[in-house]
Image (cartoon, rainbow, N blue to C red; front, top):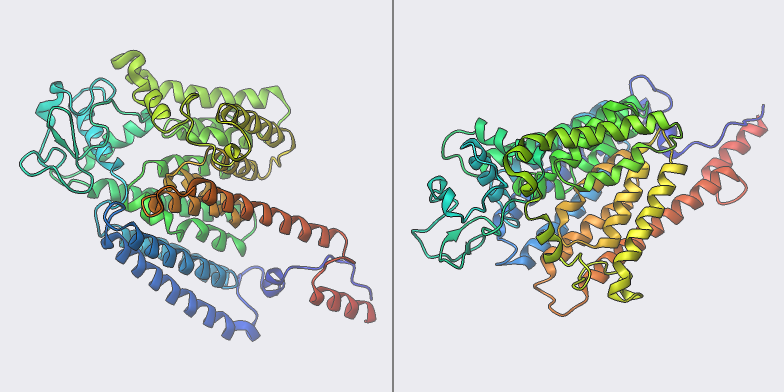
Length: 501
């Protein structure tokens, strides 16, 4: 008889005989055990490297040592994800969860080493617990003197060392930018207050780190649930591992306790578990009110939606969620709820007249044109995602727009790309992880290579990787559509055998 079914990928052939259990065929059980063992060894090594790296040094004292640890961790991560692909689904799920817990616990063993943002989180929680709006006064303000302690304001010692800042008045502070109000949106501030309220006295940095670990682990669980709902039971664990085991997660979400992780969780829930209605919009609104970056997921959430009523439901729910979150803070601080955001944009070089971002565009455009061009390009990508995106895969368009934004804006903070990592875990296009690598290299290696155009090189290599990945996937798709061209040799032999039978 003639076999007219399309050629299957190697992964689907491996597991086709036991679709219900997700287990390998008896002949492959030995190979599966070997893969499980190799994956366990790689995860153990990754956990050890994460623990060693967070204890090694800080980004000021020994950035080269940190870069080495990060590089080894990323290599082990890539190898572990590769080996887990063909592990039976049930076992792979257990490995993903165990690995996520292990690397998080490793990152909990040291205080923050590369970012002092968490100290502002702790301070904002303390200020709110005292009944004061975090937008009302900067940390160095005399009005808040009664809330200071020796941890965040170590005035009894020399103000020297990592994470310590001295104000013009001589005050020693562990909080960055101590003379300006907070920058964080209201849902983030609510998180800081909740963690503070649940923390034992004098617990310092650990509760925020534990909170980060819990949110990161919850995101792993959400990714696994989304994969199962899609009916892609075999590939779901390996894709979830792209988030669960990615070194940026233990380093940035746990050790540095970046609140971006909470926005990532809301975004995954919005795109992966909510329908394209008010619930999706409300979850996205909550994500935006944690950190503004998830607003880039909104066109993806509306992928392929043409009906005005559906668009209005999502958009209105997102706006309402943000507005409701701001209400109590606006009542207390008025327009001061913007905090340091305008000053931050100027400080980071995003404003006209002092542009230090948009590294790739500035290679071919004058500084004055780079910002406008980036905005136009983002608008065009957003329009494409909305008009041509797949409504069954909203995360795909969200990844395209969010990743493109980071390539164009070229920030040097790796935690900005935590959202990209989660979207990669939903979508499977692993090449976008190079954006996280670019931010990490830029953040840590800038002191090692003064004067070198590292921003353009780092994000340029990421852009090349993303483009190459897109070309390879496009060629693979053409090979499936036109079996006579570029198909795998084993698929051709299988079809020929079918025709002879």
